[in-house]
Length: 87
Image (cartoon, rainbow, N blue to C red):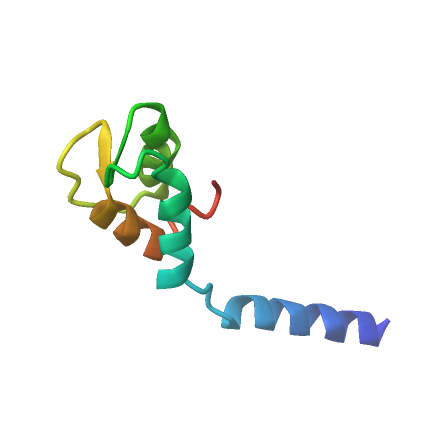
């Protein structure tokens, strides 16, 4: 029983002590390449919806130039902040 409590305590300590890793530049670039199927450098319409929704749900503020579009620069900033981890 003591071993159970010790393992539980260790799991809790490690869970709080290990910070979440942000997405890497390479991971974000790969995501962008997959999302920007038209290779226009901007996500619009249905292609942008899930990412814009994730940004809104993240609670973080980004300097987006348009309400319904997402540029590569804006995408990369949000991606590196892990705004898209649920997508």
